[in-house]
Image (tube, rainbow, N blue to C red; front, side, top):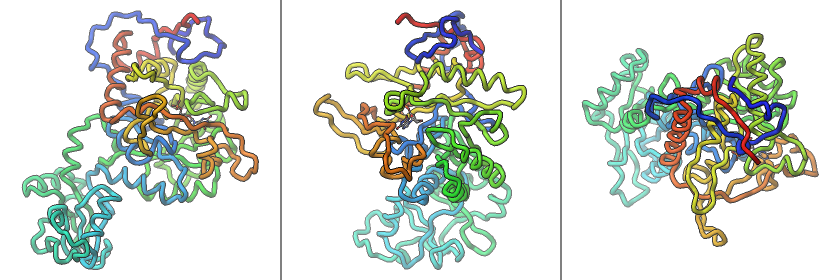
Length: 487
Ligand code: XMP
């Protein structure tokens, strides 16, 4: 572990109360710093950032941003139905794929309007047409943006605009998917200058798609967090209620979900049962419980640390309990490390309290809190408020006349507003008449595109490590010199 100044031992302290002393002379460039880390026991990330499962932070767009830039997003569960959450997972899994399995298909009887509906919902126009509009019937053709862009009559049937089967260049499943040879499919796509290549099985049914735009995206984002099929990885949050969680996890698993976070403000016994259920039924899924390692090490793939440090949290003020985040990260990570010889490696996630000054003149990315969390032993940082102001978070930006700037809404999942949906489950009070809020609704500065903002944060964390002479997170965690700042 790093060196913690004696004045900090057994004290409560926040990130703002400490500084990291540079003791080494760096002899390497900033961009040589490697931020590769562990999100869970098995899953590595090239960027130690995780977006919070909150309904003003992470849906598909944010999860895509995070995964493309090397981190990961956790989709919240504050939807009215489980299926709505699963749709967000599907959007991420479809966004950038090698082989797109289960693609959206339509029948020749559908109309141009139906293709626009697909584009609205999923963000793409290329749709294979099959005899009965399901994957169980033969391929009839394809409709792409080119086929419909000048059509004014939205009721035009697709059979009159599609490129018919006999004119289509397709690839065979036996020569691509069955050999796990994405390269072969890409070559056909490029050689024939196609936007989309359909892969068919021996009965001429659609087995998968490969899209040219995906290949280009693959080249643009070298840090991306992907699964074996080159699809972006995504986690989702699950409530601490076993019956609900069973349905959520089962549906998520079918949609390609990579793992779950059991999201609750306190540790319930039921969390352990959920984790156990998942490991027994879906052994490939990653999962986390905030539970004591001794009880949970067999089922728990990472540990999330934080009670009430978040920007929209009022737990500490309302209930008088919680911890100063920096000391919590240090002590929990130290404990986990101590238990490692007996229970194995479990990475910790520093959740909440990452602050970036947002006074009007100073609204820039200052990633020092992230480096401090990593120096204190966390393998990744989970962030809510910092990301809620990006274009990729749910909700619209608006002009704040009082502060004379653009803002976005950010709300704690324990706020009265969020608890009207499923948020109350997080606090285990969904059936109770009196609900004490543990969160509030605030405005955060609008920060523009995450595709500009996150690379700045990454560069900032790298620069902070370089200043201290550390080439990677492991060196930082072993040798950082953490001292108190004068009050
Ligand atoms: P930041 O500081 O990044 O914190 O905005 C995000 C984390 O805050 C937690 N969270 C809450 N905690 N009351 C709380 O005490 C709430 O209403 C609430 N909503 C979210 C959550 O762990 C998140 O990742």
